[in-house]
Length: 216
Image 1 (cartoon, rainbow, N blue to C red):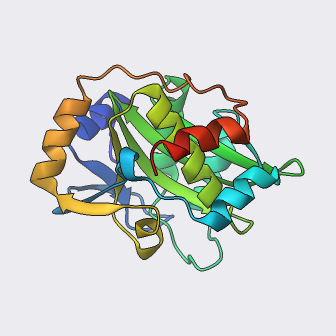
Image 2: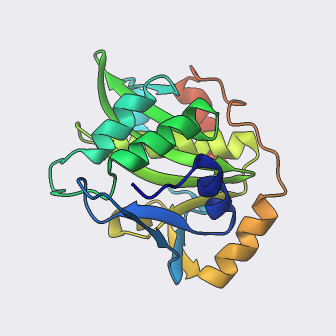
């Protein structure tokens, strides 16, 4: 184990760095400070017609901070198309403690009573640093991302940090910016005092879509 504490971890996020493990069973962590940082601009979030249809269909139920332990465990497990993850036991322990202290949140997506998708991230000031997401059913992680964006927008957040840009995330409007520019956005975000729960946990699809419509 690295000896990293939750206070050290929060301070690292405030400085623009975050920890990762080489693999699921690794004993050590290392610090990451990407030269190019991925962000998802909250005022330019894009939702496809297919995703809008999925959200409005009522197929999935979305909750907040009700199953964090299950979310992080599923993010750390091997999923279809993902042989390995960077989430080891130490990360699970640290982020669980941060969740208990109110600094880490999870968005959960359910279908017929089963957890089929979700994500979790760190909240520091007005910045939300998305850590990982998973899906066991098609579209579940997309729904989680849309609901998270609506929650951040409603709650007064100014920065949605996604760490690295992927082809998948670019379809939602994700962009890559230099770390120097990211640090400016981060320092401004740290001055903000948002409310992660301003959007009710049981917000309807219509409420969420109304917020998304204002960001698309």
